[in-house]
Length: 175
Image (tube, rainbow, N blue to C red; front, side, top):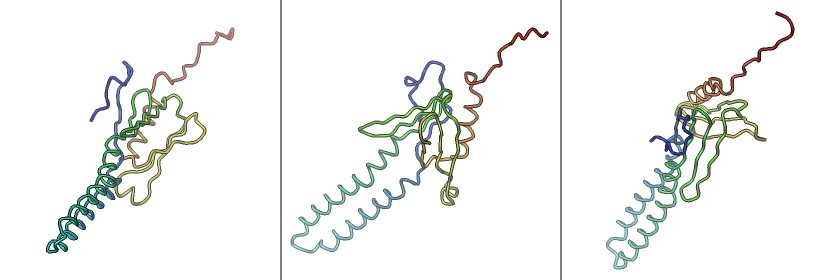
């Protein structure tokens, strides 16, 4: 899904657009399976009881609350989290009801590095750390293909013509 062009300046274009890595969805999917499976098992246990309909209603409410809170909310959060590198800036947007955004102009970035554990390396993700003019480095967790994002971002920073230092012609009296 491309990032909306109306949020970009006229000369700006998207270089990278990523959602967090799918590994952050493992626990919500596990919760979904356990909640539905456990609810179905408990419903089957009480199916021959006279008060089974009350238990089924209670189990349905509990399962729906658990699935909404522990599965649907994290999936919506994952879907609405965007890490974007454009030709001019790095943007990070997160949130469903309350949106939070962070923009870092490429010209303000001092250094870019990444970290990933053994599990992150196996899954192909990691943490991107951007040091800018702010006080502390900004860490973006669960970036898929973090090494490629790191090198693309580094390339964008160094290939940005607005940041290139052009030596001025000096007249020293020497020809």
